[in-house]
Length: 300
Image (cartoon, rainbow, N blue to C red; front, side, top):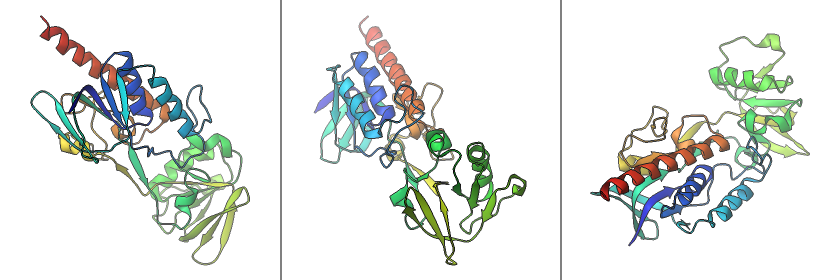
């Protein structure tokens, strides 16, 4: 059985950032990476300092290559399925049956977008159907777009999108009506349920259940829900927020000593690559700092 100082579960922005810091701290570290990042469907990653527009897979490949500089860091493409606290360490078991121990754990397992059951939504997600104006808004600004959302969420998203797209149509998909009156902004609201969305030229065609259709450059869509990948956190006894994210303090420490959580998993909704990476770095700093203290005081 292999023994590590730090086990990082998750190999996307937060996990690889944590691995870099752990490597620079000369901590024996293992990263478990299932290679299923949330932004995998997206062709480009935006709003990330010095790497704006880079394909997500390329961004992660660069990170993995840089980590090779630090020989104390290993990357495994196995999936951790069980995690438990032992007397003075944590025990991890993978899908292949491998067991490893670690003195500290950084959870960076992310979140999964649960999309509305609309034909074509999954296929166009991350390209012509997006969810974040800060991530994708610049590329489609000043063009006719749709917003697929209802109720208060539609109003709040419209505030963000309208600044970039005055030609905006809100599609409630048969859902809850907007509570606020926004007709004065020239925003069209269509309540008819959506049957399907399909690519058409450089844009999309949205077809409704009554047979009518509209064409747009792209669509913003509110996800139906967020599924936080918190199974291991629950196994370890970490407390969750009402939204389902792992509860952390300002240093990304969970409610269980020796366990940190970073990236999308650690926040109910503020999900950006740069924020995830920053969280990974800080979590690794704090984990390494704790191990340094333990080693220093043990050696006296």
